[in-house]
Length: 83
View 1 (cartoon, rainbow, N blue to C red):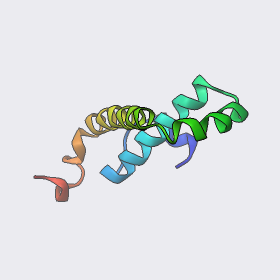
View 2: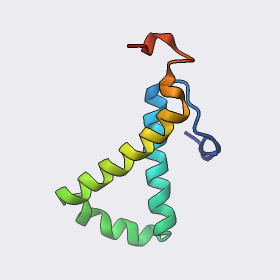
View 3: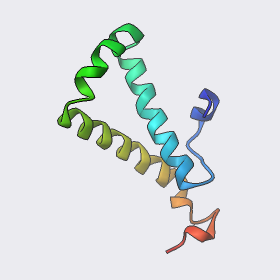
View 4: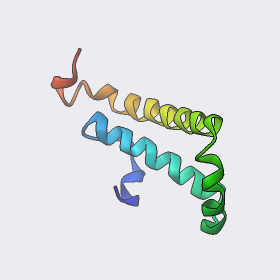
């Protein structure tokens, strides 16, 4: 996924929507902590912390909710996802 794709929330499939949600979470971290060196230093700490991992999952889930809503839950474009 390119940075150009961050210009809008529309995706073709839920899978692409989830990838976008993850990318949004990653970009949020990059903006919050612009130093790659510091992010690399912190990664071993939070990658072994259950609370940090749960927090990351929550952030991605919130982004996915936003992307899904923007895509009308993909029901209008792709009927195979209707339930």
